[in-house]
Length: 188
Image 1 (cartoon, rainbow, N blue to C red):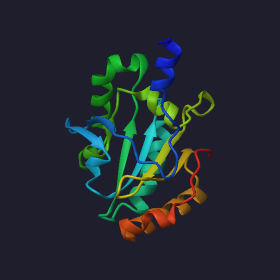
Image 2: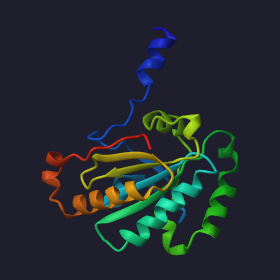
Image 3: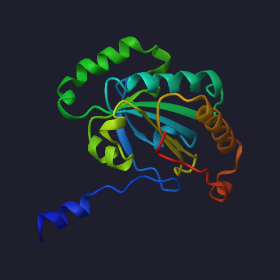
Image 4: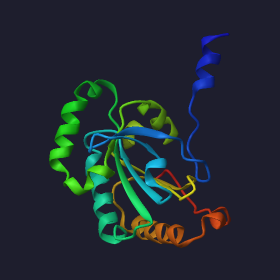
C-alpha cells in the first residue's frame, strides 16, 4: 500500500451543516477530561474555537455576546475551545494556568483546551492562514448534529441570526430538527 493511500484514508472531511459532530476531547479548566458533544448533556451547544493566541479576542467577543443574550437559558450551553497545537503544546500547563487565572471560576467548566488532533480540526473547519485569528463557530443541536458553521470576528448581523437559531433549536422537539436545517457557512 502506498503512503498516498494511507494518507488519503486518514484525511478529515470538511464539516458541514447536517453532519454529526465528531467527538472533541479536551480538558476543562476545572482539570476534568471532557468530550463534546457528550459533556453538554443533550443541550444545544455553541462552540467558539480558536487556533491562535490572537483568536482569543473574537472568541471572547462571541462568548460575551452569548452570555448576555442567550446565557440565561438552561437548554443551550457555550464551550470556549482553545486549540493548542504545535510547539504551544509544550507550554500547555502554563497556558491552562493563565486561562484559569483570567477566567471567572464559574466559567471553568465551559472552557475546554484541546491539544490533540488540532490539525484534523483545522481541516474540518477549512482553517486558513488568512483567517488564522478568527473565531471558528459551530452550533450543535441536542442530538449531536451540526446546524451552523461560521468563522470571523463578532458580527451583529450574524449574532442576530445565531440568536434566532439557538432559540429555535432549544425550543424545538429534537425529532423534528432535521426538517429545519439552518443554512450555514464557514465564510464570514
